[in-house]
Amino acid sequence: MATVAIVGAGHVGVVYAAGLAELGHTVRVVDIDAGRVARLRRGDVWFHEPGLGELLARGVDRARITFTTDYREALLGARFAFICVPTPSTADGALDDRMIRAALEAIRANLDGVTPIVVNKSTVPIGSGDLAREMLREAAIHVVSNPEFLAEGRALEDFFHPSRIVIGASDRAAADEVAALYAGVDAPILFMDNASAEFTKLAANSFLALKVSFANALARLSEAVGADVDAVAQAISLDPRIGPGHLRAGLGFGGSCLPKDVAAMAHVARTYDANPELFAAVQRINVEQRRRVVSHLTDRLGSLDGRRVALLGLAFKAGTDDVRDSPGLALALELLERRADLAVYDPLVRMDVTSNGFRARAVASALAAARGADALVLATDWPEFAHLDLVNLRRAMSGAVLVDGRGLVSPVDATRAGFDYFGFGRGGRPRD
Ligand code: UDX
Image 1 (cartoon, helix red, strand yellow):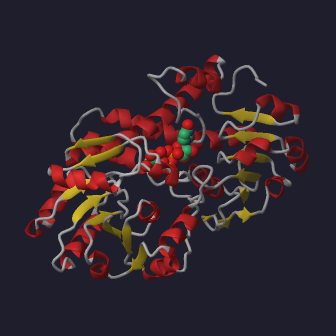
Image 2: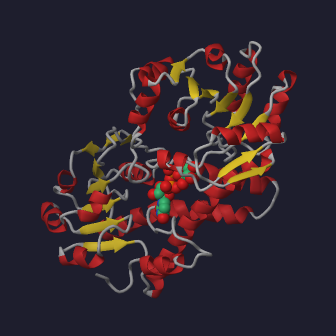
């Protein structure tokens, strides 16, 4: 069993700490944020990830996980240094690698005789393996690119049962050592060079984003030709060459990965003038979805100034309390910009939504949001929104507009309950 230093106590770092400890390794998590380290020491995981708190506590109880702000302490005797720091988007869509550089710099300054293999988990600009190798050259440290593919809300499932493990390295022995860390995880291991591993991450998330935008493009056309996009998506997804997943039409993709990674892919494509329009279209279609909701609402209600809108869902998807790049949150801000009187409800997210001096009312239930509303918008695919009591909601509202931004409600049921229903790609014949 190995000793692993993990740099960065964010979503990825904490999941990897818990997972690697469960596999039997000793893990030392280092973060520059003392508050975050103190919380983790108390067993307080501040974001929602099913099972993570329990697994982390288990690792801590078995003395396999510690948290520190001191790089030297984390690296002492460590065979591996995992880099799990954020790489946000810059204005032109490129990935900002400043935190990676800072982490590498901190590793270099705190080596104290150890030569860990540096394992890069962060989504990085292509060529970061070379950068890391260059920065750590004097120390003769191997750099391995080992991207993570954890989806929020099912991150532990993805850690223990990944569809594949991708290991990019120029040194085969270092690659094998990293592969051995995952002994006990049943998944194909793919060995490649660093750039290919780094690019795989962008390719995977861009393709997922492409599928979502493709579904949304189909939705728009389905409305025009009178087809039902859900039926079409289901039918095509049974072809193994197309495959299931990420074909649900709706308000679009959000979160910490897909928007950022497709922007990074678009940036790379622009840099090399290699089909940038493909990725630009994926981005454009995604943003159009929320615009279409706003134009549907103005079409039905006229000016939104002072109109009461109930928005159900702020999280970027069900099963998480994350609002990073959330289409629902972006829609909420846009509605506030237009001076709508907004009430929001999300089963997990409690936050103040303010824009332009206007503040949304945060309420504790769908019914409370609906009271007196002119329009109701479903923005996140929370399962409970698929089982709303439509008749009661409609009675509580003063208007009848329902925008089903996630294809959760039967158009027939909604119409029966008295709603004026709109769902992406569901403009064709009503279904049961
Ligand atoms: C994603 C990848 O799935 C994961 O492998 C990667 O490591 C990180 O990025 P995540 O950000 O947790 O994970 O979200 P994901 O489940 O992929 O959903 C992304 C967005 O697409 C969400 O906003 C979701 O609502 C939306 N989506 C997803 C759709 O609109 N339609 C779909 O059919 C699927």
